[in-house]
Length: 373
Image 1 (cartoon, rainbow, N blue to C red):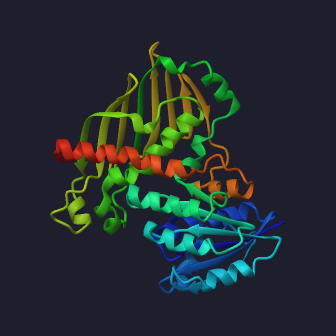
Image 2 (cartoon, rainbow, N blue to C red; image 1 turned 90 degrees about the horizontal axis):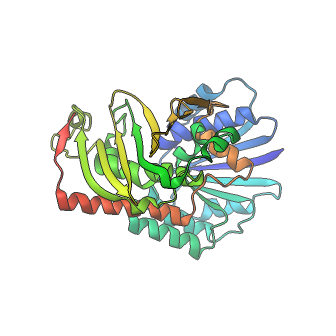
Image 3 (cartoon, rainbow, N blue to C red; image 1 turned 90 degrees about the vertical axis):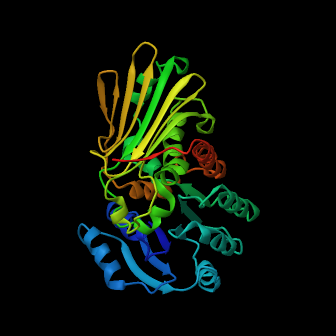
């Protein structure tokens, strides 16, 4: 049986409460015969133990779980003392999983601490956003490389761990008959029915484009390249037109009557003769993450990653749902099995920002009008 010390850095944060803790419990339940887990929740603020225990209790299906021990530690993120002690106490048969569920500006301070330790039996998970801009992303990557942490640091975007992105051999065989040179259009959308949903302070500072393009849309394109459905770089898309919008009532939701933050975007572009459309928005009529590829002979691939978990090749439907696990549970499963295919590398963490920079320059040059919807 594997023994994990799961060090959740930022245990009091929104990401931990909404995503990671429930996924950890689901993972523990599904793997109770294989993995023994000790949760170490580290945070700068004082953890609300009752709230976190309540989240854990809600996530537990029954008592069949090997989340055997829970500790909460309060401390500063640039103080190495607790971390070094934890590293030194790690036994030969134990595995330390350190999950950075903190704002990106803290990543470098944490990585400096990991520079000081033996890399034995340690994995570090860094989830998007990989910095608040391309300069910060480059500093994070440089620190990883300077400290020789490439083997233990895993960059991830939860879109890559959605169940609907895993294609079966039957589907891959069907797709192998399509030719890259026959593609005429690629449409990718990521729509939500929800509003800012309690993330007003964070979202109003960045908007939909910065929230979605550097990681999520890059990841969806990354998936297409993985399955040889495109061979062009995401960063090479030329922007032909761009629309931005803000849902009616957004200003009230974020308590900012002057806000010009976009909650929707629609980008028309092209790459090597292929028309590309990228669309994302909050408070839309449906929740949908979908990719549509059209070919010159009018064949179509419609890939409903979420919530449908299906792919349609012309008129034939293929079901991609298998376990109905949460995205972050799938991430932990890959980590357990040491499968690294869905994690991003250092260059991927930069590449997503490159296209965002191109969009930012386009907006500065064209000054598109913010439409209310």
